[in-house]
Length: 249
Image 1 (cartoon, rainbow, N blue to C red):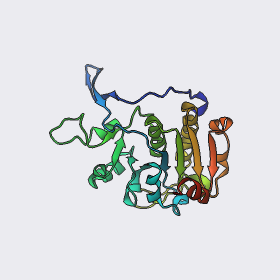
Image 2 (spheres, one colour):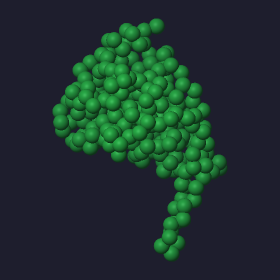
Image 3 (cartoon, rainbow, N blue to C red):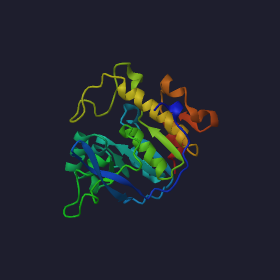
């Protein structure tokens, strides 16, 4: 779905949802087993929502300061350097690595139902996993799902930090963990185009939210076609302004 097809959503507190836990096929017919997964996180929004991408533009920001004025949302290998309040993974390999390193014991680890069901707590059943279900999962990439979940939690002002993607060259999607374990080379526009559409869709879907991109040299693509800009809900600030005006005590 492109962002032009997105529709505003009325915010409602998240309580849980029904999830398909198993599919069996008998005589050519599919049978779905479902269970209701209650929300285990019970998040109360506090301050700003800081959505941390893994692009190089965030390297000069002290992420530890973020927790003084809000809640932190990160994804994938971020845990190797910083433990946010909430972390997200959508792919099996990185989720397995994070589970092995017990990231779920250090913060709330969100994942899709397939991954949640891979890691049930011992003797507690599949509906009581060590991982948390991404609420009303839109099935976006992890950075976009982090933004989405911040809005589900009730945050109304999202700051995007370290969302870079293509400005370092059309065929280079830079990531601070590129070429490290689990991560490979990035030579495709697939992630970039998907993320941009998802970010614009979220601006439409959450008309009650403001979106601020923190970047010293914002690329052209992030400065155009932002639906929230028409309502003064979108802006870009540099890192110094962010640290002096948002993070300053």
